Length: 368
Picture 1 (cartoon, rainbow, N blue to C red):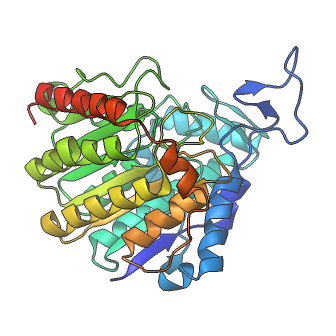
Picture 2 (picture 1 turned 90 degrees about the vertical axis):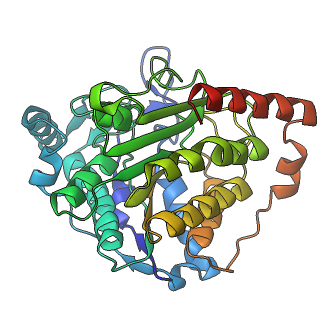
């Protein structure tokens, strides 16, 4: 099978100034020697480098892409937002929303990040590739049409979906978001529509604090086409796979899409600094196999993964490598050096039973 890998070195150059965690340096917040937001280029660059070192990259169809066009961006984002973003970008950078600072040229870098997603979706939708991975940065799943937040400046996946739909390449699309934070931007964009099913698996009570409830199912024509699964902190390998089997796959099968897109964050991993979950590289690989097999059954394998969060420089490369190897059905491995330690730290049988029961209860409330 032909698996695409869309990336561009310039996306690693997106920067937002000297931050300490999510706080701007100044006052009582002392600057760091290597300051910056948790969303930094090294997790993505180290993932790409690991693909190089193991030889997996050579098995993929690699390319960059053109930045998303103005017309493509304007299908999601108001002209006023795009104009203000471009103005600040040209004048040296700034901050448009919560925790999304950017430097000079940030508009062009964000458009390039969205363009990688657009190109990946287009290539898979047209059959040029079987499936694909877009190493997009900055990420996109928190970005509303006129409200960037959570490190996200443009709504990468919705921009790609609307571009494909405008060409008649995909009518019904599933967006599965397994980033540990609720995909509030994607949800908001499609909340009133029945042609895109949005599913978000996220840590309960994490970012954002005001979205992601189980009861939020959509509105009007979109009623029933939005699924939130707020999972308890501490959920590990077994709980995530149970959520896939009990909620995600049945919902996707019932929707019967033309294409599946995954908002692929690795911040549910056990040592991520922005979450308290217990997933491992093996978890992401197995979730990818499950959704890959589901895509093969329902929509001729049309599956695209678009990179979102994940903030452990040490562990994101191994999670990403395992995911991409599973997507490509490759035997090339990057052995997880922390697998034994992380397996020992998985939830106890009693806690795991509680987590599975919680997922079962939510599935029943979702009529699944």
